[in-house]
Image (cartoon, rainbow, N blue to C red):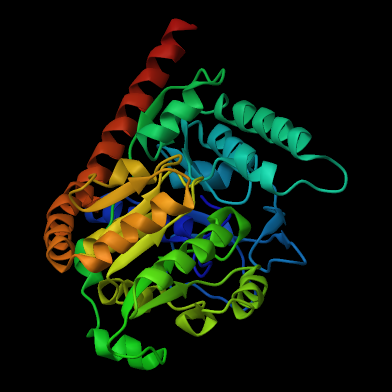
Length: 386
């Protein structure tokens, strides 16, 4: 279940859809419980849309969900073996209640490090430290009610392991389908966004929000623009801060070399990656940035800042670079790739090879093994307590 599923433009929605397809290919039945979005209808009978109250500021962000009571006899008819939560906005207690009704173990994937996000968004009622502490307590409490926790990267697992979380934590990234990232001809994409054909593209893909570190990206691009004559920054994605960052960019002396696309359909974004010379990924709080894996699948090298996960998916000096949270370091690595065509080509070939380790079929099989371990442990705990 997830509080952010299709058609929500987030990595969680994409990851859950990928996981659903992969599990079904292995012969499993997958039910998805997600919010009911106005005007959107599913064709899949295994997707249950439950009513929610949404934020006034984000049409996809539920503040209360679901607005229904769980009926045990209906849940029992589904014969659920595992309940797996995939939360993007907050840890709702729905998964806990559903698992109890189904008498099934609960597994949680940690897609966002909510305490760190809370630091960036203090309210007028509480400061950053108070917001962090409250969110941290909520996260620990929720994860300790689960029978298994999935960390999407080793860095994320290390972060979680520093807290009093007594639940078993396993590192299992969400896989991708590499064939989905065959690209458009570069001239097609450049023409669509009015980018001169001779320019090399530095690409960013992600939600346009403060936690994506976009001010850092814009400042870094100043160094890149000064060093490289024929370069263009293409920022792909929508979000609540899109207009804000467009206004900032408009004031820069190099603004005509920056393009914001706004929201684009996922199938279209998949085909843009290969057009770029490099993906610039400057966010630090994502346990598993899908954009990094998707870029590598398209054969586009990545330069990313070390954080809670990005570095775990890049082979240093093989298919990309991992830098410090330093504008000079970050921009210098991008400049190096843009100047060295041979290195860029080698990195591209390496990326397509290295990404095979993250095929969805392989990682979904690892997840199923973890499910089975949790089920067996749950049975053992039950007999030990009788």
